[in-house]
Image (spheres, rainbow, N blue to C red):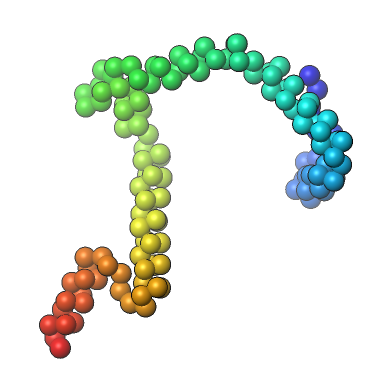
Length: 126
């Protein structure tokens, strides 16, 4: 199967121009779309790949030999430092963003323990 697109653009400007052209050419879009589906079916047939995908998923739920890990998935997650760091920072970012929204809406302190203690100290001083 041949490539589904018509172009071999390599710069951002050329890719953008070609994308707009393809967007405006309905027949060209339908041909490229159909060719794309044919390509995926030819290069990644379900019959050939489904077994490998199923084996990989089932392998993740097998018993782990590592102490403190029930499954291979638990073991993999424990070893994934980058994923854990990204997850941690994503959660912290969400926390700080929600604090910012709260402070913006109330015009004051957030409801964090440090802010509550600060408010209580100010009330005691008065």
